Amino acid sequence: MYRFHVPDMSCGGCLRSVEQAIRTIDPQAEVDGNLENHVVTVASSQGEARLLSALEMAGFPAQLLSQQEA
Image (cartoon, rainbow, N blue to C red):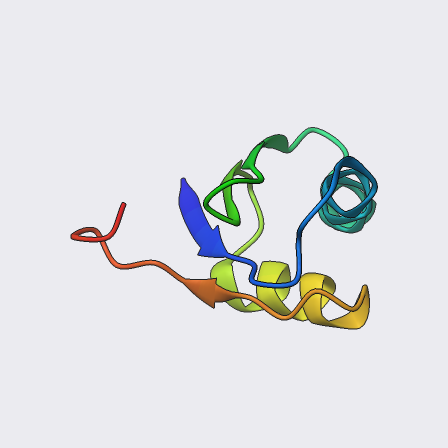
């Protein structure tokens, strides 16, 4: 499971776009977003680099949160 900080995710439409970007590379991914904290939790069979790339290509550059920040 990964937790990403997505600073540009600020509304429900943004969250839907983030979810769609992740599900494009992993249709079975579980995605949970917190708009207030700009954090997305992802359970996916894809690796961190591929998920980060998908988010960036969708216009939502993100950073992986460390376990201490999770």
